[in-house]
Image (cartoon, rainbow, N blue to C red; front, top):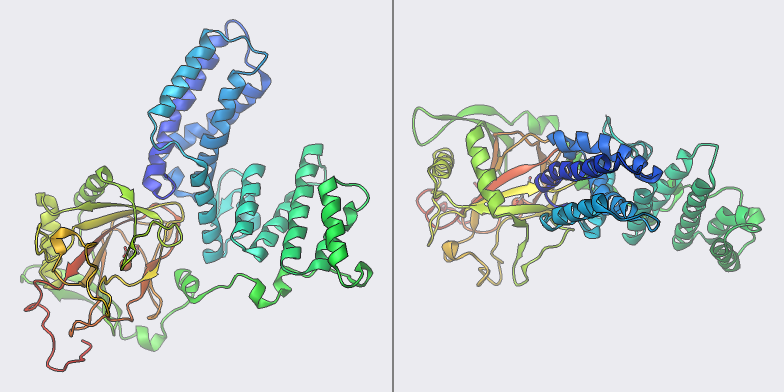
Length: 523
Ligand SMILES: O=C(O)CCC(=O)C(=O)O
Ligand SMILES: [Fe+2]
């Protein structure tokens, strides 16, 4: 899939420029003889403008609505162009044949040509963004997200959104979308838009029925009891039959805001942290300092910022150079794979509900990577070298998040306290190297909005800052798991988030981070 890496989507957008060229060549090759049909002309005009902008401006795909439009074009607009070129009544001659062969060749050479699964995933991501950052649905429909304006969402995308909200059992969310869509209709309805409107009303009634507001559901469809399609009338009859009381006693439809809490999507603590709504108390944050931290060598001081006192969480600013970040991204891209999730006893899980990103592992074999790894050693004092056996750290896990990319809260340690090490699943290099004693994360670009790293039990939020790194210990000095370090990556609202994880193993740290005299010392 492509929707799980914004970087991949950017490449896909650039490639689309070639499709437009193919279309343009076709248009020019036939202009002398016959003329292009009206519907093809409309398609051409629509695509020309958008694709020109989208394929040339790299930052265009950093907006999730633009990504939806991009996937929608690949899946539903371009096939339509192909169909129209080969319409039944048309005479097929050289221009059509040239167009088709160029189009098919392009598709063959494009391993990332999107599939419906991508569009579905992108819609689900939009919904995750919507509920995490409480985006305004009216604005989204008109193409506005967080103050950025782009094209309005077409009907078939709106329909898909409703299919997904319903499939995800987000009942109140479905109603809110239905209401916003219904409000967006102007007074003058064409036959087509009226049909669409009725289908939305039908969906709305169905959701009220699912939420056990049966009388409300019937009331919503009451206006169609005489005239309306068969299926609308059938729904109406069904809801009416199931209603215990008659409709006359019902004045108003129960607004979703008045629905009982168990029927609504809840705003949880993690979402609030992502929005920056949950904060530390002034007393707590006043104890957090910034300072130049000593390193292993006297002439290098690191810009340290404390993010949490106990357990300690640090951010080190300006610890990686532009060319080093470019190197890591470039090397990782060559080995990109959909991010999995190592879970004890379960192997690798590729679920979209847990983590949405692409991953490439980069070893410190090259001088550039070795310098970076050495710098982490200088700052933390830990042995960070990675080697093929008994390695003190893992290779860089370079990650690029997808549309609305995120990582649910988790802990980084691999060992299960009862069963011990993840037998057979650990990479050869770190087998026998112990658990992930510490985590180091490089942030390798600025994310325009969203994407912070949050620690849900510590009210700590680290905003993404290019060139900075986060650092913390996952284990207590006695080797036990520090359960307080539950953390996650917030969904990326605008931008493309690149990070590099460096997990430092226990092996090699016995003199660098010795256990304390007191068995259960926490620092
Ligand atoms: O993306 C983030 O901010 C957190 C990533 C993370 O926790 C991980 O990759 O283990
Ligand atoms: Fe993590």
